[in-house]
Image (tube, rainbow, N blue to C red; front, side, top):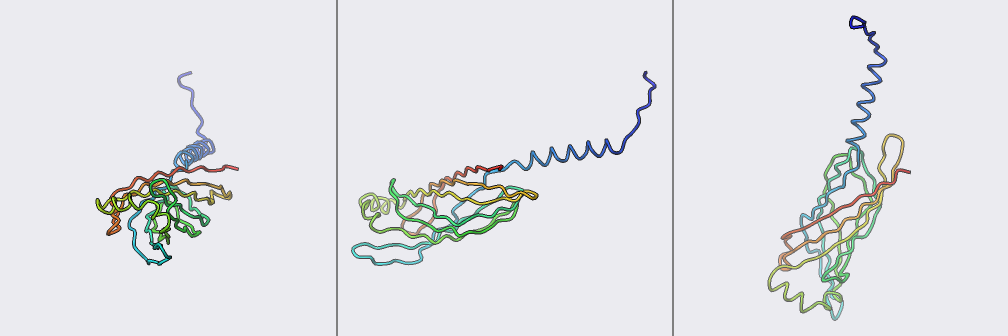
Length: 184
């Protein structure tokens, strides 16, 4: 039996190679959570809404899609919180992002002066120490196309951003993103 010759089959070799490539593609195609980082916050305008002042800002956010497929997402609204209360919102416009790519989004935001007035003592203390903590939350829905199928996804992003309320510099931030993909 030791001297028995094995017949080589190209079709078996190709099937084996294709199976290995497919397994490798499935392992690397496992959806990965995107990353979000606030790069800067810039003041757009003050609007006097007696007896308080509303503030309009632009949030510049760096977004990374680590996945091997492009994504398309719908418009949504990011909620911005201060000391546990809803302070304002930022608009996220519908768009798309290529596979394994980064892009910068500019999000128009508005902070409600009435809500900030409810926290005047804390806000003034934050201004004095030049450190203010804002929390933000957003759910972003969309689709990712894999071969011929469109898979729906939902990404939940929670952020805690520490800013200098005088110069609006981003001092520190913690961002978490959790993605759910519907395979139906």
